[in-house]
Image 1 (cartoon, helix red, strand yellow):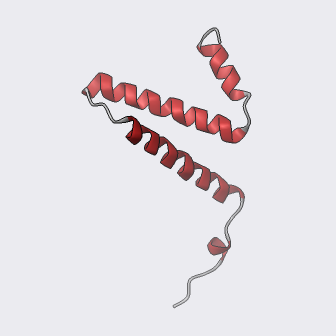
Image 2 (cartoon, helix red, strand yellow):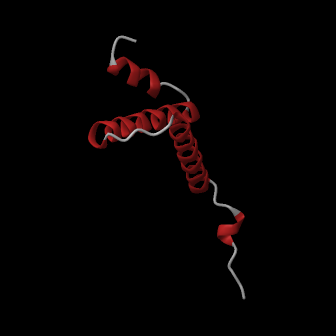
Image 3 (cartoon, one colour):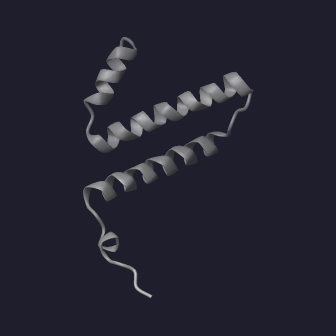
Length: 79
């Protein structure tokens, strides 16, 4: 890739699960960069990977819940 623009274009052409994960990874890299630059704080690679995985799974679950309401959301709680 020749630069940031071509990288963004390539990412946006990917299918949804892969595209979403790449955006989440880039976002966390940017967050980590800011933590190091502004606070001098560096997290372990494992902590960053866990954060990416957790956020991607949470975001994916929210996306699925918006598209396909679960049975539980339609049932009313009774005492």
